[in-house]
Image: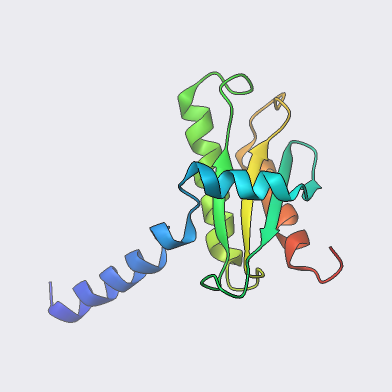
Length: 132
């Protein structure tokens, strides 16, 4: 393989990652979002959000809460997390400078990958609209 194809592959991989500066990691970060008490609802999810202050680094960050009581199998919980991270990555440029926590609020009757991805996408798209 030539060096240029490796560099292109590395660039594609880098754009598909979910780096730490786009994640909510600490308990305090989650608490501040939940404490702001604003959320958007969909059929299965709640999207909690808190606008970031002027003193904070601009950009959107995402935290995920997928409870074991709603999805017993770790494979299913991890699938939902992957779908949410992918939808966030695709919409991150349009999102406001806010912290978001996507929380599974209802046990899905069937875990349809495409339907869940569309629901997450619709919820994040709602967060981009000016009237929230």
